[in-house]
Image 1 (tube, rainbow, N blue to C red):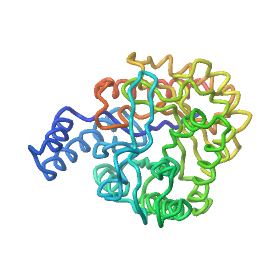
Image 2: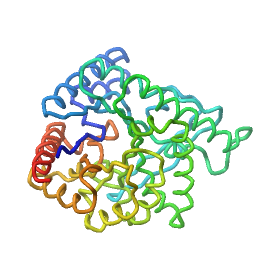
Image 3: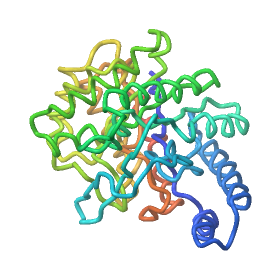
Length: 352
């Protein structure tokens, strides 16, 4: 039987776009020139994804500064000294810190979606950042005259708007990126922060109808940046039962990089619900080796022992370049890995 397969989001940007972004930061080019480069990269990305036979496309996040911070473009009430996210190899990423309210997005994902859908007749999935990730912008010591509860209400309204605009503009589905789920258990092993994240995300998801939520998915992974992760050492068993409390129709789960996938699949079997579709990661973007279609096939067939085939799909563990400046995986290698995912999924489908 057919097994659906989808990309997660980002594709490494071409060299000319990376140079353009560097030149813009240095003041040697202007935004209009970089916008033209972004449009060129988007068109090439759509064409190359279509050429692989991918049934569902994304924009490859070619114009996003990162998967997490695109809504902050043009937002003034930010300071650079926000939450620091350490990765296993020692490098870090740092979020900005909110300095005032009311909080409003400076950019919405629909702007990326409409450009992508204008270039193809195939279904396009739009990734958005989960509100739980942006909740980390609010400082621990608070903001005068802007209490945290007021911020969370504003954030939920903006996250709803970000998602709804994409649904209304014809996105085949909208994927909430929730990489901070597993990380939260490193920050707070008691699970209190994770519970807060789940409740905030559900506050947004519950604003959509049952039919709309069937087009909403949640992606989780232990982070992927510069060939390193931020929370792969955190036991998946702490996250997954809570993850499936989210009121979404589809879940995209990192699995290819897990040391014991059978154990994880058993947890998924025991805690996911019959109305939740499960896309399992069969490609590890931070592993430099390109998986063979046969390896992908075998991963899918193993998953089918735990998840009914009618609820099963495949994806990559994570985007290939969630931050625009991450060049640890080449653009060419990303497309080779995507091709293996597609071919391996077809092999598995012919065996189920």
